Length: 395
View 1 (cartoon, rainbow, N blue to C red):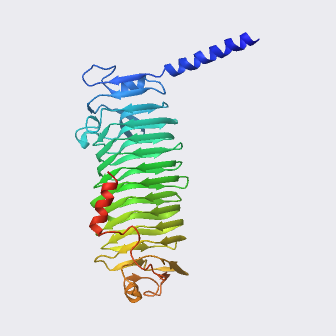
View 2: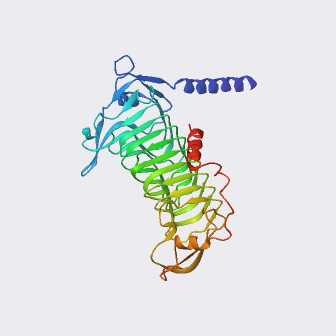
């Protein structure tokens, strides 16, 4: 009996080792020196668990999928029900997308995996001139590292039911939101990424978009972008150690979000507001530095929150806090005590705040006292020095 057990175990072990050894590396090379010269051919040949290594060059081949009616998609790399790794030769070396964004007649995707749960890993690839989405994952797990996305529409969109990680990536000249996580996404991390002249940085929304985090990122709207990071429609998570500048609407936005923490960020705005609050299950906003020539806080709704130990620079703008012109619910006291506003003169704070004290149709009243007695602990040097320290820390 013991001998039989040993034999059965040996057979099982051999089968297990055989399945592991079946994972294969496929090589794609433009010059014909690899297994294939077109990425899609490697995908079609590969099995789940395989790795596809892609040599230098621009890969602009695509297939057109007709989804019915007038709906057509141009897909450069289509993954159907497989878990694969794509490893390029490096940013600027391996490029997916055409030389000209007008080359695609229909909505164009770089890598699309929307038919069946899968695990997709992507590194060392540039996605350029894609008029719809660079990477699109529906269900499963996504990992993107050391990639770039430029001159496109959306960089990454994922309904990552098994989580997603986007690290060390660069987004530039994106016409819509650079990274989007939607339900049923959970455990979505965006870390150590840079966003330059983008319409939007990162957005999480829909009710089952949970535990999503943005940290150690720098985001610039370049004077044309709208919002740096937004949480909406019940999404939960955090924003931390990020730097925002140059967005026309808001640095960070919370619109009927779930529980969100926002801390240790620098938000520097010229035309746009620092933050907007339009409803949240709970917002913990602390240890942030907000500077804006438009206004620091746009308060559109009452929000359960803790709002403390922040430093606000009103700049040349008219407002520290401004409410909507009409809010007939309440009355509500909005607790913003324990923050530093650059002054201890309550008359000045009242002058630079628009709330129910200024308009009988607004039943929100901002409470400042007790004030913090000086700059927050993170405000150790000049504003310019702080920004320099922040940039050094995120390199």
